[in-house]
Length: 371
Image 1: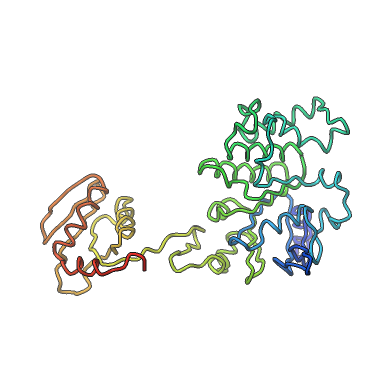
Image 2: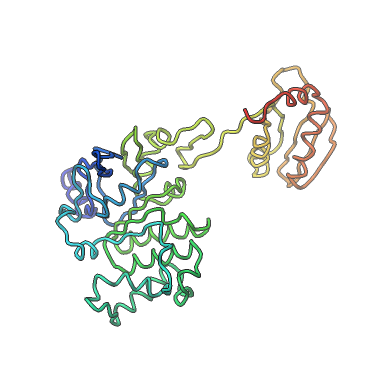
């Protein structure tokens, strides 16, 4: 198979559902226009979940609303299934695209099941009566999201996270090839965030749907999404697989901070702690206890080192982590404490350090905590 054959086959498998062509987003005002983002060109594919990432104010919600035809583009075009979005009638577009927004607090005096059933409105006709197929779809959608027990509950009795799950079930019940979501995990607890991201990814794969969502859950998106869109006022729009964007440095470029370090191999961020002094740590470096003890020390302003800075100096305080579940404090060469709890160790280290370095107390007293 030559290169051209592969490209043709790949294009057939990864069909484009939405394409942006030199898109400009923003708002029309009395005195002119307020441009939020411009010259955006990218595409969304069927069978993929794409996450839109960027800082607050970058224009994520504006872009999503433009793709959903809730507001017109200021320039360029949005094509849905190969046709300019402006040529679609509302009813036809409702059978292609469902939308989940963050604000659903206005829905009251309806049960969760009734709200999910609203997703069938593009197919139920003028009277909006559900047939047997519609009822089956509603029931399956509630089950997909895992909220069957919420079906008889009124929306105003649900938590923010539960209401958000109902709205996602409604979008699933709409049975559109494209689902757009604005911060769908915003009100969910941590386990529910992971479960929802995985559910949306499975929907994209199993049903060949195009899932496009804006989110602030950066690390979750990097772990789950097939494609990432990075949006920023100054840097514009960059798209690609999370792994490719990690390798070429785009993730670091968009989210770089002095107090954060990005691990390209694992696609995760870690915090860079400011440390005030060194502390010698010995023991089983490959053990979980050793690694987490070093992390706890850094969080408390102490930098773990293998030896004192001066070659001939004897460390006043040493922490030993043998990897057997114990933590030991060595003062002036003698073991002063042995505990099986890292918290107990941390409570003893600071008094031990300051006992041998009185100058550290004086320096700390002169520090301004608000600097």
